Image 1 (tube, rainbow, N blue to C red):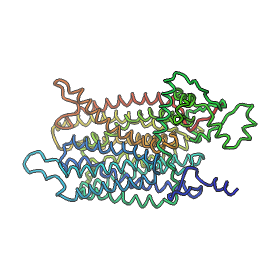
Image 2 (cartoon, rainbow, N blue to C red; image 1 turned 30 degrees about the vertical axis):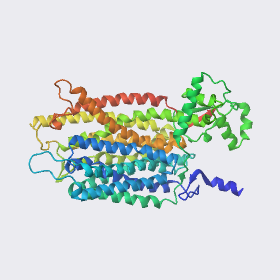
Image 3 (cartoon, rainbow, N blue to C red; image 1 turned 180 degrees about the horizontal axis):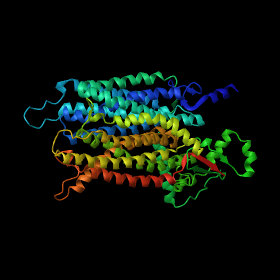
Image 4 (cartoon, helix red, strand yellow; image 1 turned 90 degrees about the vertical axis):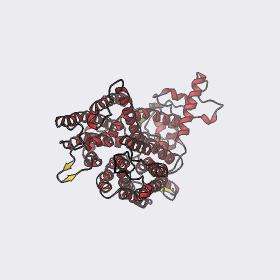
Length: 602
């Protein structure tokens, strides 16, 4: 009895920071996740304090051209977010999210120290520009190596943090209880809220320090912030429950795909499908409610089996689940479990493994449909900043740096996130009568629609900006145009709202839908989508210039100044592409069935 009670108090598959079994009531919950939220403020402050204004640093002090600076920043941010996949994979396969965060924070700290030392030491910077009108000498040789070593050590650390921190916080909640699932949803909303709080400090205070006190102080702020995050994170060690790594999820995916391919090559099963099949079939539903664990699915047996089911223990029920036939989605993968080859014992697959791989294959199209949104978001740190730089950025006696323009979407997210969690979601729950109120895909879809509106607004604002320049004879002038930069705020507000809906929705969608052994890797897809969006932005600019610059025509995105660009046409292209992408997403979302709402039908 005592052993049974002790087992009931333990979180199965979780340990504490000393690798001892985690227990209920002592580990996990919102108290543990709160440390993660505070850490996210510091972590995102450290990252964005430099990333938001890095173009300026590279142009003024490293003497890069505007295009070289933009490309370097795009590659840096894209690599940082793409490396989140590595952090997520290591968290799932070999280490805990706790360990990956600590190691990644130290790596980012080292990268920022390198950048701080270089910015503080004139001998490690390229020579100042000559007084005569001559091209400045860009950074090169060992100095360039030092710059990129600092940048990409920072990117590696950021990637590890992005790949481990969100899932570490989400793991603190009991997904088998409605209260735990609601708490996890609140966590993701406030994760984006805290991310925005860090960004707000970064694009205001940190950018002001960089522009007015020197970049050594800007890098210093980032260095101190990431260093402080480590003891803050460690302070919650006694409360954390850490998921035990279960080996490489890629091995499971490869095994199921190879087994399916071999079965297909044989052209038929030739073997007994499921000797212990009980006629149950795993099913899914169009809205996310209930647990993500197959053991928690409702079993719906036939009437003749009702009495027997009432006498079954939990382990017996789990056995029924194991003996169930796989779902009908992606039915070709069912061959992996129904056509077991006798000569390849290592390729023997369970229903659970097949269903896990199905989930991965079904969420990947959703992942691809969000890349276009992040391509739109990439404009906030490139063309939108350049637009604002040509406009009147004064607010009274204060001149706002263009790099501080993200303050608009960030502030809006900070206001909207609590309203969404405490007003909109409870209202939606009462109206729909469901646990979620608003499903993950509905939330992502809302973000995609807002991104379409944002691109249309951006095109209209650009037309107005160029008309002001033409009407005042300032197409070739370097002076600020007589139009306030608040016009740019509209596209920032729409894209900021899109980011809130989509990022929080994606993080929770990938975490809750993914198989337990793949959750950190799956959650990292949210950041990978952001990375691919940055890369796609660069590719689209090149394609547009190549397509529009044929013959004697000038490319849309080239010219003596931004006033000679056809940026409004590029924004309309983005609007059309975003609309087509939304239709693709809508097709996927209508057909998608949530894993964690699945039941086993008799």
